[in-house]
Length: 368
Image (cartoon, rainbow, N blue to C red; front, top):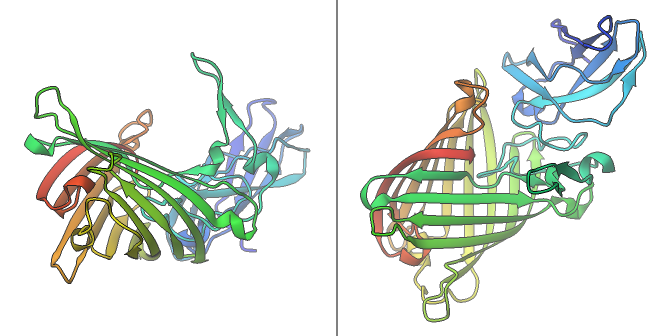
């Protein structure tokens, strides 16, 4: 095990004479750090202290990449004077993962998010993986198995001029079964996209697409993830105007280290339509049977994500670009992203898929 020359010290306030020294091992790269970096916490004080190292530490990977690591939550424990304990850290932004569950050694899938989304989890203690988390609110205590939720597609609200209006999207993925068995790779996801015509009287929501998914996803190696699943897209209307698209898809993401903490990701996806499409039997001629995602990202900095899809047979398709930047870089009190979204082509709205449009919008995102 290699230890870094850099030793990070964290002073514990009670008692004041106690001191922890955090000694991290050196990861080979950022991708390797996603699986967790082991940090030795040494109590150099004269009294027992809580086994909590500094919240963040800075390390340099073997390939020269500078990383900011954040401590994963762990069960309460103490370290006796002169003794030590082990903790796990992951790159900042991934630390919401369960405690000893290694992060997928792959980038977040589209959205994988997360892609986090998006995982090859190993077994974790019940207290970390299955434990309920409570949050007191003014309307009463709320609770849930929050560690099982991950980002999926971006959650955002973006607005443009004229008929671009507003485009709002909510999306999440959920891991129903933990552990390291075959079913631990199962995910449920839900995405809802809404179009808000602010340029019209009363500002109606003119299109809404509801998109549940069920899929299996796992890491192939520290830089690649593959997923197979089923997705349903619907406009939620009655028989006369209903569009119900069902697709079986296969997708993968491969990440490439560009140096200086920059990463490129390539996400090809292919799908086949299953059953009828309601009143849109020609949907495949506008949506096509495949897409390609290209992403350039630096954690805690800029992210550009371009997705193109289409049908070579019909010559129709579309391209969508997301650009985001964390406003936490400006102020730590801001917990969202400055977000821009652009679209050109066919099928931005499911029930208006025959219309060719180009729109540009800007707003904020909660996940990216």
